[in-house]
Length: 228
Image (tube, rainbow, N blue to C red; front, top):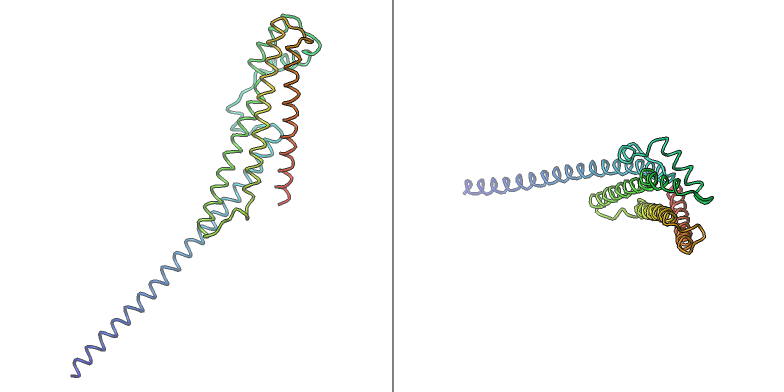
């Protein structure tokens, strides 16, 4: 009888020990998981902070139509001599150029005319890509913390800035196309007062207005980001 009671006691004791062990193990695992999530949260916040610093740098360069080392290695300008000659001829286009000068301007246009718009486009692509990475980091943080972080970080503002800069780049490319169209039309023998040239100039004015609005939007968004 005593042996049976002793056996029952040992069984209960073993069960209690097992339960305590399970509870302790649960708390250990939970603590380790919490610590790991805390470490991931801290690491992700550091990535977000670093990405914001990179975005500030790229946005500043893009806004002044500059280029970073990556873009400079991709987009090359024409030679200094060609650039001076091109800018000089282009500056005198409104005053009238003879056929030889127009032919030379068209040649130089192919080498120099698209440099600044191409450089702007590449920088805008860089900015857009880094904004996507920034958004991904914020999404990762939302997953880690279990609630949305989109209101804690200016993802929408950065996306709006990239969009406004992209519009600027598109309008800059369009202006270059219209410049080329003016030169080609003049080479066909049309004078500066012709209907064809006037039609192109109307398009130029419209694009310039759109470009101004896009630049204004960029400035407004940048100021908003700076105040955060």
